[in-house]
Amino acid sequence: SMYIWGMPGSGKDAVVHAFSAMTRTPAKMFQVQPAADIQAWFFSCEFDHEGTRWEEGELLRALRDGYVSSSGRRVPYLILITDFDRATKEQAEALRLVMDSIEGRVMGPRGVVFPVLPGTRVVVTANTAGAGDARGRCVSANVVDASILDRFERAYEFHWMDWKDEEVVVKGKFPLLVEKCSGVFPQAGNVTGAVRAAIKADELFAEFSHRALCAWLGAAEDIVAVTDTVPVDLLKRALRVVFDKLPDSETRDQAYRLSDAHLTGGTLPTGSAPTGRGPRGGAPRR
Image (tube, rainbow, N blue to C red; front, side, top):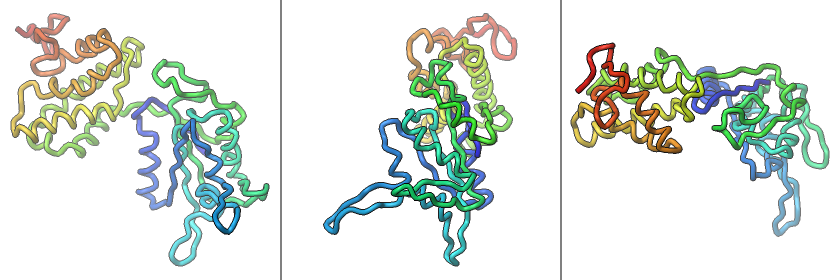
């Protein structure tokens, strides 16, 4: 069993989906929602005109039966549970048996214990290490009981991708930018690096995940597609879709200042970098 945690947009769920696809491992995903009753994942009491009955849940069937192929062969599932640190105490307790499932136990209706199909793997993902929100940006994260965390055999912290890897990904996602203006990617990388460094140093109260980067480049590609032109200040225009969501004007101004020196034409109203230096250490822009 595995506990993967890290900042939003660091690829926690994506790597599990990719592993499933690349290895052709059948997988099921369950998302924790604080207001939801996850007992139905295991079993529930249903009723109709014929009376009441126990209905087995999707997670119970996946853990016990696995994926049943057309030939009847049972293949163990990879179970992904996302947003695990959003679980309430009651939900976490309900999931305790899932963590024990590596020992072959899952509880069904009326207290019946079913064996778990050998080879079944459980992975949960979260934004925090289980001690609650420490950064002030994931305030819905709860503290996870230490005895539940102890049941995970592996725990890994995920970080944002290095630009050399992330650039390959975004170029695959935005082929029109590659075709029309491939020079925007180094600029986007410089901005991404500067903003994320400030976030990691607690100098900027914000997030700049891979999702935010894709929103930015997606807006830029929309501009190119709709206007059939490549404006000189393309990335500046598109950057609004990310920075306009920041919580206050001071944070937005700070983010624009960090980006200014890395974009053609700058981001500030005057077009002048606050350091008095232009891109690559050149003369100040006028």
